[in-house]
Length: 421
Image 1 (cartoon, helix red, strand yellow):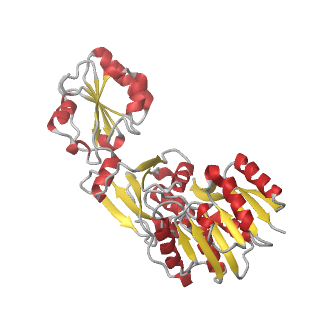
Image 2 (cartoon, one colour):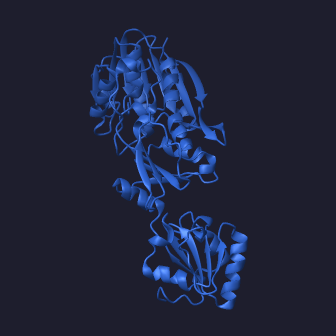
Image 3 (cartoon, one colour):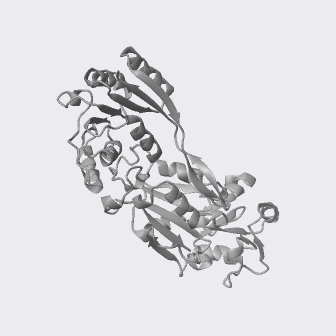
């Protein structure tokens, strides 16, 4: 079937924000020859809309009358066209039409999607991008997506639920404003489209077109002045991350709890095993500058990353090693405090190696994600005669919802604490 042969089919034609002006001559011809044209209200209002002789125009905003009119057109053999935004099969009217008609009765002619246009405008490949739709939804999917620290995240906004402002509030509540560039993209494809990057301090425009989306693009946080930072509990977005492993760090709320459970002494030796980006150990140094911090992380490139984060915070670890525990612990000074992250299947062996070296009155703190891991490691601590405490922590972060605030949950964490007599 050629593009000009539409007998027995409904043509579903995608447009960008400029409407019919963006259509090529063949698609424009479909509209001009149609006897029934359905379109969103914003397209019906355009002066250049023109169907064939005796053409009927209807709004596609209400599905039930739209489907009825299209069924009548098909039964009478009348040419019908449905105009849509972007790609009709991507969060568009295509799904509704497929539910009412068979695929053999529909022919789709997509325009570039809003995501394609947005990434084209900022000149960034988008094969690694994620997306979230807030249309008619609460903000929890966006808050959850941000926990994974995607390299690029497109947010399809719902102006009726706050639009770009809601996205900014959720980004701020996640503590990640410093970690993402905020791109506001309005009326993509229209001659008056507007694409701008807004800093965290810049206010949003007073007038934002309802046809807008937001791109959140991961970028290294700007340089910071250590003296201006809080003493502890730094926002997650202030930490440098490895680009290919974003989000591998202890969240702020859990980090605060672990620092409290460590009961840091004024002096002594702290081991941070499975240090990730170094967040726990480096914050400990801000609290207790005379501690000797030894950070151990097995992932390649971690030593340079932890050192860079230490420089940003104005602290100096005693040593940073790219090595696996327990082997990488052999020549370190015996610890007074230990925090163990990660570990996987070898966590029991790591804990046994730590307990062999832990000094009197020493403390070990371990955050865990599963009940099975908690049971496994608690038995090791009990067997070593440790004074053991267990807690489970669940944190929520506020996110905007319909003029109010709802709480978006973070993953719950078990904290196992053992203290040597």
